[in-house]
Image (cartoon, rainbow, N blue to C red; front, side, top):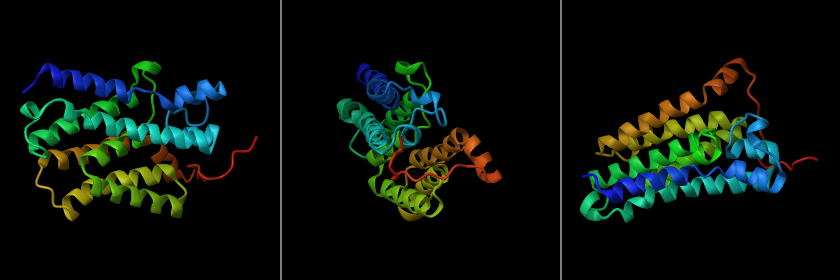
Length: 215
């Protein structure tokens, strides 16, 4: 059932996802548009690379929170529309809101539709939809990052961990969340195409997110 509340929630989810935290923090505190430096993306990783640890952490947290917040707008639509909590219809609304927020991050209306790759926002969405699977993804990300020092490889691995954990660990009966997990993999592969090419050529930059930024 489509209502004015669900349409409004989708609009709010997009606007929430469109908050360009990397761009705004860079411009407000450093006079820098991070999209003009490093990888050219308006995301946490490039903020770490260009501006350092503190702004990078701030951007990462904000991007996670906006994905989580947008997905949880489902609670404001009303159970008469979404159905019972954690039902198929309820979860489908969550997924729709979360995906809309991710699209907002990729194509933010507040920053000329030039956004980031959406990993942190995806993380926030997954935390709202399936906490246990999200924790597995975060664990995979951290392990791969510590071993390889490649953020891109860590993001790709974490993305693939979501549908695998949903299917083989939690045995989710919801086809929509399984399909969503597969779509995550495709989206991450598309947004990380250049990174994959550099990984295969051995030219991808390793990163230490916790080093001190040098002047």
